[in-house]
Image 1: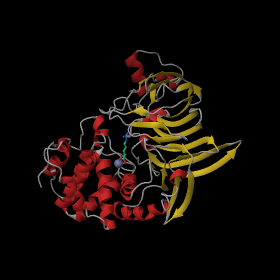
Image 2 (image 1 turned 45 degrees about the horizontal axis):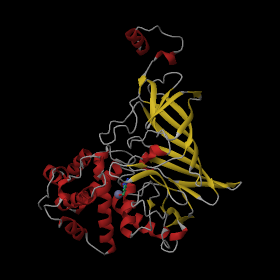
Image 3 (image 1 turned 45 degrees about the vertical axis):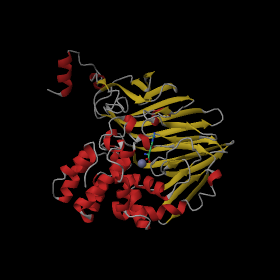
Image 4 (image 1 turned 180 degrees about the vertical axis):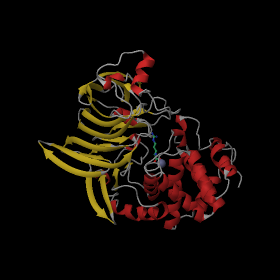
Length: 457
Ligand code: ARG
Ligand code: ZN
């Protein structure tokens, strides 16, 4: 019996004339199942490409936008969700060119196509929407998303800001390629991830097109807008595209040139830099208080120190190319990026990695710091707690001392290579380490990653 007939028999419906309508499908799940952010992401389909067309007016804060998404159904779908906050209003949705019913509730946009989508089928979604985007407040009290500044937008989306400005499947396990077409008044610049494709001015407005050709998780997307000095040059073999707030131009002198030496060094350790361009966005946003490793082009609230630059560049390998599978694996991002700071300091001759380790380890055993095991910091309010960064980096250093430099750097390189553009969790890192080292490392990882308390040396 064919699958179609089996389904028809099981559900006791007559076989309709059109085979597409024969599969009733079921609704896609409203979340990807991440315990830290249960509503984030959606089930039933994979997004493959986002073509985002944004028109933004900084003076009114109004966004008028169209998102074109290429997706593939992973089950027979009667309807599916996209993540988008309902403070933005959706005026129309179509699926494969046919108008689709839609409803908004909280941060879920529920789309019911005019006919069900068969499992495995590719389909296209077009969402027209607009309004005045606002950032979200995270469980730890910080803000992320579309953060307005005096001259535009500081757009950083870790862990949940993507839903504040475009509809999508916003869990990090659903990576996609992107094209951004952003129109702003010509007094402003719009900077996004990937390669600058074109800049077209017309009638006092300028359209910037950016192409992000390598897969990217939603939390790493950015469209930042402001009064920026844009520079795009080939430096040391990299395409370095930077946007610097003119207020910071003096401090930022030499900023583009600082990238190639660091990328060369980290590339020699982890394997070639995984993206077709690099650079950074240097905004003046002291109120934001953090930088983010937005893919290819990190965003900084000030001119970065060497440590901060090293941190965000190392994230391009660890976090961006190899991305965690769940938010609780966040140490795989922050522990690695912090260790990257230590490696850069050692390379630059300012401080050895052992000295960095010793300084972090010197915290008193009674310090609350030691109560948070980095491999599951206990909830979304602790995502960016110090132990995730420092104890995560200490765990890597402890591993290095245990297995020796050759095995340790082979592990880092294999991690970057084997999971390039993918997702992987802590268990996979432990398994890889044991494979490369050729022995069990449970005791070490238990003490450093999983158990509360200060590990003994
Ligand atoms: N991943 C960033 C960094 O360490 C930090 C992001 C913090 N985000 C937040 N919403 N507080 O480079
Ligand atoms: Zn970081």
